[in-house]
Image (cartoon, rainbow, N blue to C red):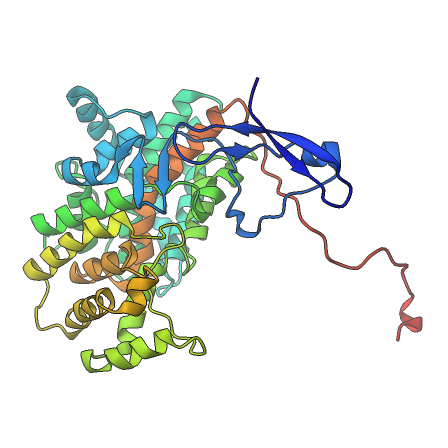
Length: 431
């Protein structure tokens, strides 16, 4: 017999037994799906901080212990030994590929990187200074108009084709968003380049001047993409799942995820880090801004420190910190005051008792923003970079959800606090 959890109403003494579900790792979950039907009660959980919205076998996080695993593999091992497309294969298919499987997967992604020529013209309909994220939302949502040959979400082969298309075309679309914003020609992908090198080529080459990607830049981007590939049921992934639960096509679902990611509290956090550094302005101002951050009555906050999930340290930040320093040593202008400020702020915060006691360590957003700046990625493209990587996680979760026999359309309830029933009053009698 399954374990149960007994809930008691202290006012009436009435009890209800709720089934306990055990995961392979982590806390158990109390099933409350029958609570309203049987007892007329709803669970109230703003922000869903204690609610498991689904069962998933993709990513496991233990925020207290600073653990992140993709399909059971520690992120530290994947970051040290894998590459982004191998991780993408793992997240989507559940297992690390063999050599032949990886070669085939890389070839499929490589040959799906081009977008329709008519889609290239679609970019010209956006205002010249539109934010790249707004363009990306529109273009990705439009993919269903260009690739409507395999939109049967209940056909596993159609889901696979859509997944490949999204992973392959996202860098092409992202680079095109940038090119449009700087009034340069959109560059075609090169199938002889790897995933990250190809993206850098499309970003920075022009018809009159080729771009040869730097190995440090490729390695840094590959690492960032691995670390950002998935992060369990975050806001954007939950948005993709909720949109997908209605039966919407995969391109529309991923576009909804991009929209959610755009928020400064989610994917826009690394952009906010650079904005904060620009506000601080100079190393000489650090002490003043540290004091402001400690002042509860001051609205200033240090962006890129602490994390909603990780209560100790962000394991991704531990990994990427070394790469950040490597990039700054090899690629950045060492006399750039922005990078000097960023490294000094990191040093001060890591040694300040206030931040140590509250475990407000630099997170992945702090370092990723600094790295992207060193790679000459414009600040308004930072969240776009996040979207390229996270597309893999979104697609994996969308595919898992569609294949789940227990999947139902998402329909959260609410605790109503509005007016009780009242009668309509004609306009001439209203006070």
